[in-house]
Every structure is written in C-alpha cells, then in structure tokens.
Amino acid sequence: ETAVFQTPNYHVTQVGNEVSFNCKQTLGHDTMYWYKQDSKKLLKIMFSYNNKQLIVNETVPRRFSPQSSDKAHLNLRIKSVEPEDSAVYLCASSSGTGVETLYFGSGTRLTVL
Amino acid sequence: GEQVEQLPSILRVQEGSSASINCTYENSASNYFPWYKQEPGENPKLIIDIRSNMERKQTQGLIVLLDKKAKRFSLHITDTQPGDSAMYFCAASGEGNNNRIFFGDGTQLVVKP
Image (cartoon, rainbow over all chains, first blue to last red):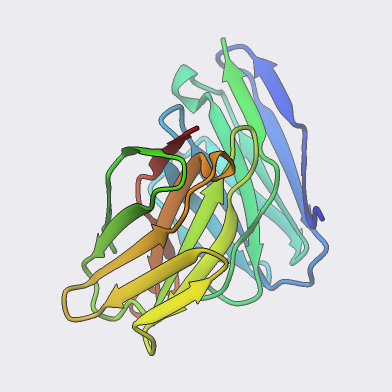
C-alpha cells in the first residue's frame, strides 16, 4: 500500500538546470522529510517539516530548497544541479517528530549528466 | 548530532543460518531504535523497532536487543532465507536528538541458497 507518493520516478538532466520533485502523503501525518540516498546507499536527511514549519535543515548546498504548501505536501527544488546531486531522493512522513515510524515514498532517481 | 555506527557493511550467510547486525550510538538520550529493510529497487520499510524501556523484542524470526549501558543495539535474523537478502539500516532517534532520526550506513545481507 503506497501512502507516500513521489513524482517523477526518474529524471535525467544537464548540469546547471533546475529540477523540482513532488511528494504527497495521504497518511494524515504531521511531519515530512527529504532524504538523499547516494550510490553507496547511505541515507542522509536533508530537510524535515512539521506542520509546514521547517524543523531540521541539515547542511546541504543552498541550491536545495524545500517547499511545503500544507502538511500533506513537501516538494524539493534544486537550482543549478551539479553532478554530485545524482542520487535517489526519498520523501518520507511520520506521525510524530522523529520517534515514530518513517513511511518512505518510492523515490526519485536523479541523474545529472 | 547523533552518530550511529553499523557493522558489518556486508554480510554473507548460508540459507538457514542466522545473521546478526550490530549498531552503536553516542547520545544517551536516544530512546527509539528502528530497523529498516530495503530490497533492490524498493524504498526502506520498517521491519522492527525497540524503545528504551525494553531490552529485547521479537517478531516473525527477527530479534532486536538493546543494551543502553553500552549504547549498543542489534538485529538478529534467525533461519535466514533468500528473501531476507536486502540492505538493512539501523537508526536512532529521541528527544535528545531534537527528534531527528539518524541512520547507520547500512548492511548488505546476502543469503546464499
């Protein structure tokens, strides 16, 4: 049962372009996250939103910016992508703020040529 | 922040044998320790978790142990099957970590038939 929806599934782009990824959760959760999973499968948190408020902003390049219209949506915009941005971007949600189960979306695989 | 060390990075076992993955954490205020399984091409999914008020938890062939004094927790898979082959991630979170979830670097489990 997929309750965290991400689009697109894949995106291939050139260095310097802007990309946007969308995420929506239908679980009624209060908190949403963006994780980056690199080629070594390491999971690194990028951002976290609780009820539209940014509560975690890990040290990521400034070209990354999260955008949330409501607690069910959390998008990610990358201005001027770099080759090292190639990764799988996983959106997740949880009912609480960290000490509850994370429900992940299927991910968006970004390839920067 | 929290540092979660996970070992081994790769674990190869024979079908039917047991597999153990170990994690350590630094922040004594961490109180929630989930384990996620990620199959190839899939998103991570919670398989079992344990909170700091417990030392042992078991479900469907999975056992997790928590040693708060040593800041160590582990996952034990009994009677492994080829379907258990996947990436496994441990994580730690809690109020002392500003409710952020910190993941270990993952263990690639390969169950040989």
